[in-house]
Image 1 (tube, rainbow, N blue to C red):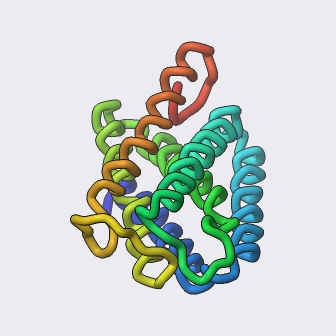
Image 2 (image 1 turned 45 degrees about the horizontal axis):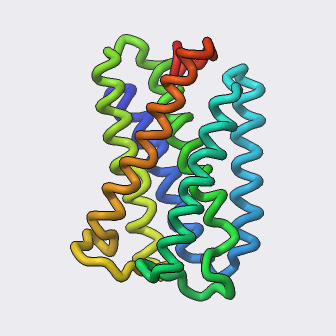
Length: 195
C-alpha cells in the first residue's frame, strides 16, 4: 500500500469513527457538540505544536461551518431533511461537525503534501476532489443509517440523495479553491494551499 493510500485510509477510519459516534449518540446533541469542540481544539493545538497552524485553518473551519449551518437551516426549514431524536430543528453539534469536516480534509491534505511531495499538483487536485466527494458522503451514509436524520428527496444512494452529494462536493471544493486563491493573493504560506 503506498503512502497516499495509507493516509487516506487512516483519515477515513477517523471519519468512520466520528460518524459512528454521532450516529449512536445523536440524541445527546449537547454532549456531541462538546466532544466535537474538544476534538477541534485538539486539532488546533496539534497544528500549533507542529508549526502548521495558520489563518487558513481557522478561516476554512469557520467558512465551512457557516455555509454548512446555513444549508442545514434552509434544508430543515423547507423540510428537505429532518433530524431525529433531538429537541431542536438543528442539533447543537451540526455547526462543529461541518467545521470538523474541513479540518479532517485539511489535515489529510497536509499529511499527503508532507509525506508525498513528489505528487503532481494535478494529481493533488484529483485527490482533493476524491476526498470532498467521498469523506462527507461516507459520514452522511453512516449517520443516516444509524437514524440521525433522514432526507425527503429523491435519487438516494444508501440514504443520501444525489443532490446532497453534489452540494457537499461543491461546498467543500469551493472552500478549498477560495483558500487556495486567497493564500496566493495575500502571500499566506500554507503547505496545503500555497506551499
